[in-house]
Length: 312
Length: 281
Image (cartoon, rainbow over all chains, first blue to last red; front, top):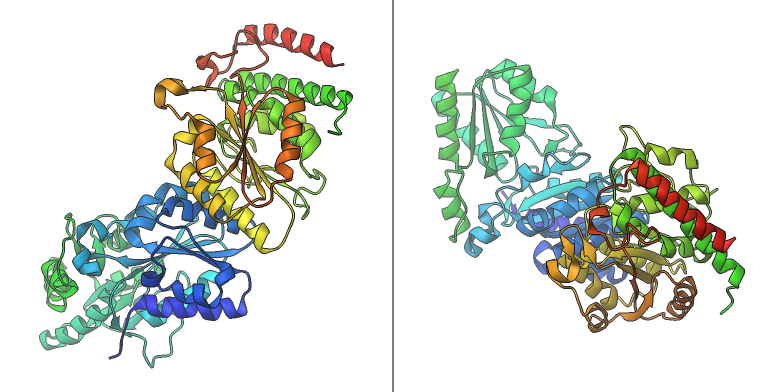
């Protein structure tokens, strides 16, 4: 399977969008070479603004441009754009319902060597409750590029988060199109459902494959549209498979797993196990070592599947 | 300078009317921020009744100037001004801060015609103005972006991020006032967290700085004329003002920052405003 960092296709998609839509502007906060908005900056220097190391002002400037009718993408690392500028996103972007797309890269522990200060494991939790703000997590670079176009076409504020590293192209050679508020079953199964987002989608598919040996047939849902959430696909999964495991590179508190639980407890209560970061900060290490440490692996996911099946 | 004495009297009369509305609406609402609304009433009256290109009949008129009230808690002053300009009926002023009202505690652009940007959380308005000015500059439009910040608001770090950016991008189409009334909720600005020397700070950030008496309409107008000629950098007009200006018992009283006067006091205040009106008629 081909490995590509989602941010690479994000940057390329921005350039393609910039070619067809002269109304698109892009901002960054001194990380354009990492977030890949630098590709847009090179192609359209007049429509790119670097705020410097000032995320709050970056969000404010994006809001101002959007207030004048522009479609604005603003990027930085997930930690700083979601954390440092949370209230700016809440009060200036979302409250005013402006057409600003906050696109965060370097989310989760796979930031790696930079350590805990740079590893956002709370961003989904703090972005989800903000009214009008939609929250997306692509499963791979292909979906990331599709999301760019969907966000541009859909007026209003968005938060999209991607991990740093190159990850398998889940949708390579597959006829797939991301739709807002719609989550696809990417593997059918009847015994248990694994709901995953981001880099955990590929891991979920591999876990499902391995579970066949145990005669467990796992359904896999790619929950890339965390808000709005596809209630129907989740309720059907609960009713048809009777158990759910969620998997995300994020805290188990308030993240995608919590979003799933909010739907399930209301409509179709079944046992849920959540795989994610368990209430601790990240630390320095190689991305794979950190995933291993937090059990964000095929075997870690399989262990959760056995746990939830025991409760079924 | 082209402004006539008659026009200055007319503006001062409007400012007095704005103050009357501020007192009444916050008194009815039994909450709100009259002190910092009254300190900037002369600035708002000058902007809206003399300087800004606006069209209340067509609030989204493409050639209009943009005004952002960064110190959103002075919403009563803005609301009074917009109503008097004809953006919405003056009658609606008495709905301030009530459930379902278009007149939210802090300005909400989606509920009220004439409000260019929702504000209220201090320190964020100037960044928005920078973005708006960037868009106008990119589109080669000559409309300008005006705004008012509080002096206490300048304690917010984001103001200085935005100040840096406005100068960096050479945004000569931005002109802001600092309503320097010297008071904030917890006391005198110099005691809570000193922001001075404010003029030096903005100058060192690359802004063109003017310091004026924010209640002298003649000075406000002549400074706006000078600011208009600056094209390569942003302009800040530091307006020395008096909190609660216009009502003797309210002036320089920190207690009227976020609390209205009583109905009894309102009667007394209105008498004072009537005397001022008489002077300008």
